[in-house]
Length: 309
Image 1 (tube, rainbow, N blue to C red):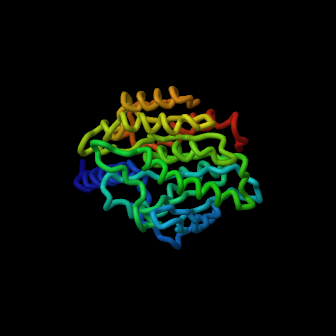
Image 2 (image 1 turned 90 degrees about the horizontal axis):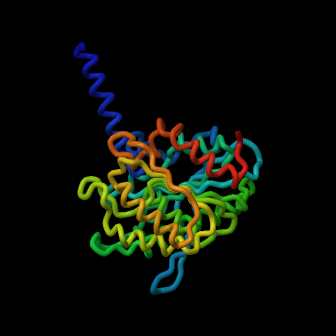
Image 3 (image 1 turned 60 degrees about the horizontal axis):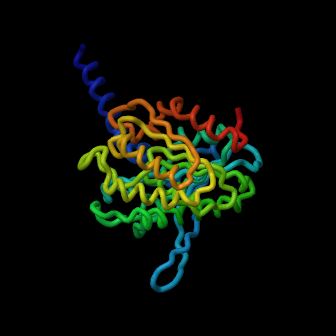
């Protein structure tokens, strides 16, 4: 191999490594290309909006805005809605990199199926910034129930806001989330928001860290307890989509979480894909994975919501 081709090969491997690493918790586009607030995908009718969230504390209630982005198919609608929720990096210093979570290939796929999409950036992350509200305490004794409730408020606020848009069919809402966003979607579903028909949970959970404790998250039993707590009031089917080589949440751990979900009355199915890349946790954010997970999502949603063929 010539020196030039060798350099090209090294560069390609480096870029792939950077992309997969950034995509683990859903910032591939942001970390590599930046997150220009003035950038818009005109073919998706991309619009940046502010969504009010009610915060409750010792001194009463007050309103705080979070940043969200909406994407629409062509036409007047009304279109069924997907609320797409981002993950959370293990290192707090990386939270600003979430940006607006512009996973455009995945979002475009949903829009091409006929969905309106809203992507809320939860408090403490990316374009929203401000105080982080989803802390679960120590790794030894994490409070995932409270963390889930806090994250759910931002997801529910996005559902309520999107329901005011004339292009949105408020009677057909799907919550979709990756990693911490998957867990936030489960927690939000427990509040039974009006119009909710399904949840799609991509590698959902909290407390994972592939560097410090690969595959074994903080307090896996506490997470099972939190999932059992939320699942007791989830009234719609949930698709659990995971990957065999997930270095945040190993399959044997996830199996106990799904068992807790079912034991609490949760209805749905779990799919564990074969290994993908070096760490399958970030599969959803890699464009090449779309043909792998999309058929499962279409099959799961087709009895529940009308989609374009």
